[in-house]
Image 1 (cartoon, rainbow, N blue to C red):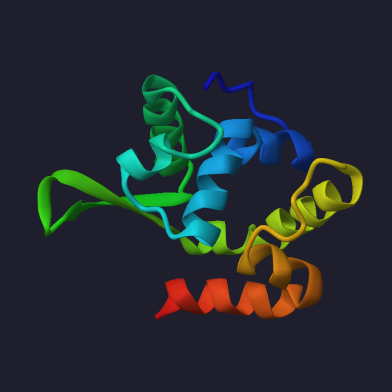
Image 2: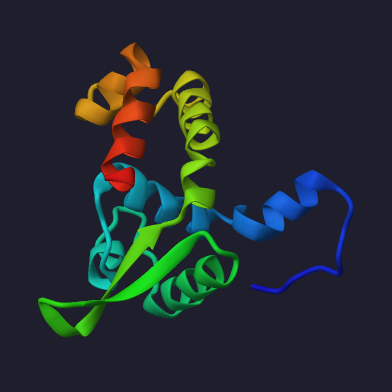
Amino acid sequence: MKKRSPTICPIVFSLDTFGDTWSLVILRDILLFNKSHFREFLVSKEKIASNILSARLETLIDNGLLTKEADMNNKSAAIYKPTNKTLELLPMILEMMKWGVRYNPDTDRKSGPIMHLLLTDPEGLRTSVVSKFKA
């Protein structure tokens, strides 16, 4: 992902750090759907291409949003984990999801426990996600 020259604008900085579609989908998958391996991201409904996925994962690592560790169960695989910096984005990601539910008529509001918690107990959802990664 191409970087702009340094900016004093916090919105531009934020978008440069995590604001493209694929980066947010990857962060969503890690935080909410417990994905942590490259192959798991490839099977997301959005169908990210492997070269784009590689580039976005590398950018997220470079920007301090993810860590990459060797998978002790599979020496040829890596595990991606969110950093505290990413956990601090969770409230914004949940608010974006709530906004999408409100304005996207195609959203499946009954699509599982995450959507249910998002609509009925967003603070409980946030707490649950953060505690999963802080343990």
